Amino acid sequence: MGVEYVSRVPRPPLDGLIDDLYYLDGAPPYPRLTLPPAPSALLIVNLGAPFRIRAGTDLTTAEYADGCVITTPTRAYEFSYPPRTRSVGAHVKPWGLAPFLPMPAAELRDRPVTVEQVWGRAGVAELRDRLATANGPQAMLTLLEDELVRRLSDTHGLGLVGHTSSVIAKSGGAASIGDLSVAAGVSTTHLAQRFKALVGVTPKRLARTYRFTATVFAIDPTAPVDWGALAGRAGYFDQAHFGHEFREFTGLTPTRYVEVRRRFLREHPGHTLDGWPLPAD
Image 1: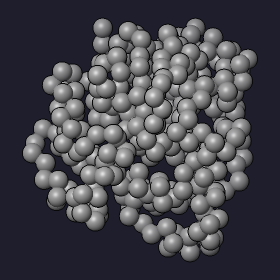
Image 2 (image 1 turned 60 degrees about the vertical axis):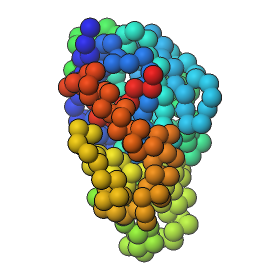
Image 3 (image 1 turned 135 degrees about the vertical axis):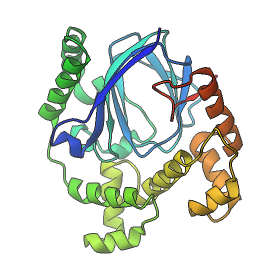
């Protein structure tokens, strides 16, 4: 059995918070997948058997039956899937979860929580029931979209954080945080506080994540990699610093990462999920 994957960009105003809504149904390519940290948050409403997550430096996994909410991570996550997984969800911009959270994003840093912990048991149960009986993936995405619009709340500092994050993203993580603070008319301390509350990490940490992600996407796993040149173009001080950053973010050396990526390409060519998740087995 393959995987059915459907996605679309949500309507305004959600499009300023969410990159896309998605539906996923089928057999994962591997029982366990590692997701390196990316400048993105994640909402999953689970409609199948429970899945498990090992977060950050945790030694054990936790089970998620109704789904999970993950703010912008600083470490890789390991997902363990049942033989078939089914869910709807959203790939969220770094600041995009804040209007839907009852707590500061910093409290969830590298600590996934269930959807129930965020929205309450009754609300999540009703949403899952409606999703399970919806007429196809597009109808399910509309239901999730409507739920998100209904739960959208005003959030202090969201415009500041969203604009600053967008500038960081466009620079590939190279923008000066001091310059961004001056341009925004706030202190670096205030900017860091707003980022911690709405993103979960400081702007400096988010910039590191954007730079790392851009560097990883510049790697062609089908060809030889000049690591020194790659590190230099990405603005790393030297190849050793680049290697340390790579291991901190993924738990893998750069060469091991390429080996794992090549395995995915070899065993599942053209798979929907190819590009970021890595086999953990």
